[in-house]
Amino acid sequence: MRLPKRFDARAFETVTEPMKRAFERDGVLVLDGMISDADCDALKAHTLELVSNLDATEHHTTFSTTDPSHQNDSYFLSSGHKTRFFFEDGAFNEAGELAVPMERALNKLGHAMHDLDPVFDRFSRQPRLERLAKGLGSKIPLLLQSMYIFKPPLIGGEVTCHQDATFLWTEPQSVIGFWFALEDATIHNGCLWGLPGEDKGSAPKKRFRRISETETAFETYDESPFPEAKRIPLEASKGTLIAFNGLFPHLSSANRSNTSRHAYTLHIIDGAAYYPDDNWLQRPAEMPLRGFS
Ligand code: FE2
Image 1 (tube, rainbow, N blue to C red):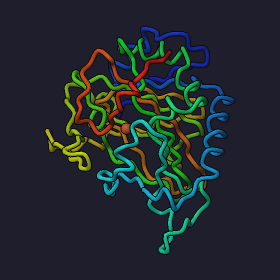
Image 2 (image 1 turned 60 degrees about the horizontal axis):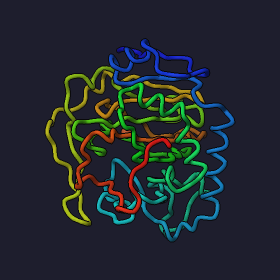
Image 3 (image 1 turned 90 degrees about the horizontal axis):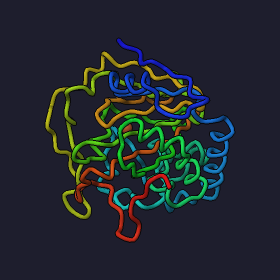
């Protein structure tokens, strides 16, 4: 078991050599205090305001990595340039009515708030995040995908072990995930877990791709399971940013605690890499990907 080195990032200016070495060694970089409490609280409050008037009967798509029914759902497949709302499996009762309050029913919002919503845009395009992306090797960083993840108390679902390159494929591989803890994430409320160093010498085990307008499928290149016995918890206090590359295996367990675990994620790809047109996430020509400015 190898614990990744943690860095105090409250005064982050640029990626230092020790940070670079840690990221290269582990595939993950943990930056404590990167985001202020005020910025975390503002994004959370804005999101809760956004969802407060949501009509659940109009947005009845659930998102679960253990039940893949959303994967051929047009609401999901056309969400790459939208703000869309995905619910937890346990959010509805048998009559199809919301069984819990809205902020405790949602799994996530995705996948283009960073381009559509001024508050998400400001949070996502902080100059220090551009310096971080470039410092971690992205030559022409483009903001591909944003997700606000609720992981609500009691019903927050697990996310099975995966590599982000499976879903956000480029050639060569270039995706970097920024995972921001907007609330304290612990082993009790479903923090991120990862397999440091297991990104090395490996290619993505699978690729998730479109096979038609309405259908997707996984292509499997390596049937061997991830060595999950080596997984370690990446507990993160509010304001921590965890950055990882597209081959870094990671997961999170269900939240059966009484506290929520809100997080925001931003996925960045390198504009110098090729982005296939059979990736699930596509943008219309009138809404191209943008960088940090
Ligand atoms: Fe992921």
